[in-house]
Image (cartoon, rainbow over all chains, first blue to last red; front, side, top):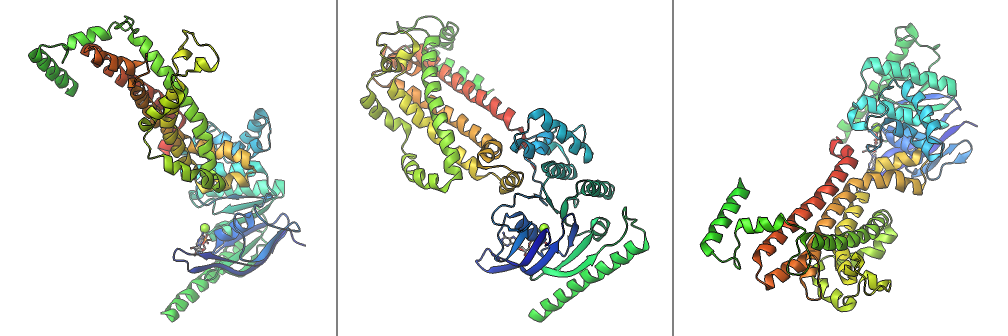
Length: 261
Length: 264
Ligand SMILES: Nc1ncnc2c1ncn2[C@@H]1O[C@H](COP(=O)(O)OP(=O)(O)O)[C@@H](O)[C@H]1O
Ligand SMILES: [Mg+2]
């Protein structure tokens, strides 16, 4: 039995004019304990919706999600989600944001701060402990959000395009750091990105989603040795392969739209 | 610039009228203001009247905050409390606090806090705090505090609530660590507005018969005796104290909600 199992889930929203919006339909996949799963797909294909369902912030309209042999009902306490939007508490400084989950666990302040400093250092923000979120750039805020999620130490870490706002250099550095944490702590990670390069660098396995309605289109196992060389033959081959799949999805979409017109 | 013009016009008409019972000279009013501890018309000094009024306001206002904030947090967050309290609050809200004054006087008479504790002949400040006055101040302060708190809770970003829950917060912690701090700027706005209204209401309440101290009482008493210099000096003091109170809350508010002003 796998650690996380998504069983034929569907999610339908009611739109503004009460029309049904099918965000996800008949979507299934498994995720092993300790796996680093990346999900790529066109904008609006339902990646965020999928993560929200796994986090238990939203309930599936059909199917179910099973984590460690229990069906998720209501909030998933084993998972934490790093949102695509900036989600730091604006009234807390950096260290209190990172500490938040430790405070919830009633860990004394001294221990808490010691622990939080490790994660602040990990995301390269030592010296910014007392800064308020508005004083940080978007990329820095996102790094604090990652530190906050890591400090919580959940079994399942869900990340929604967390490095989207970062420049390439910082992105590469944080990818390496995230991998180090993942390898050290043996966490299960589900990582959403629209960056193919990022997916290949990080993932044990890549799921490619298509849209209208959102479902898994392809699955690609990444068997390259770590640390991965972005210029290696294997890396580049995978890159081209994924790009082709995504292009095909886009083309069928445009054709469908033409057909509809 | 404008204050200078006002004072000049005032002085011009005062000299023209040449009747201190109608419009006193600027200098007369100032000489009253620079002697705040001097007894006036056998009722006590400016300082004493202001202390009496301010004590009434502070007590009634604290009462309004202590009830208005928690109730606002609950009504803003829980549908049950919303259903329970909103109809009655919507009904009472348009009723101006000043309209309550005669009713409160009739019900509570001149009963004071000191009376409540059985000290009928005390000279302490509590002998000057009538329950009827407390009631109208409470009423005047309550609505802005309550409504702004509700508004604050309702505008807490859903993203913050979801983040906190996913980081292990329970309902109690959620209130303390997310909903309250996030609504704090709005709550402080409510406190500032509420304090302003309380200060207006008390002046009105003190002008009614049955009162024998407070800056509002001093105004009406000096009016009856045609002591216009005391009357105008009292008005200036009311404005000054009101501005001071408002400024105090604003300083407090600015310090606790820098994040909100700077949030993008
Ligand atoms: N709360 C919602 N109400 C209505 N429609 C929604 C809601 N959330 C998402 N959707 C729709 O579901 C689809 C998938 O959205 P989303 O999961 O955000 O995609 P992605 O993250 O892949 O860009 C979109 O068409 C979006 O409009
Ligand atoms: Mg998204």
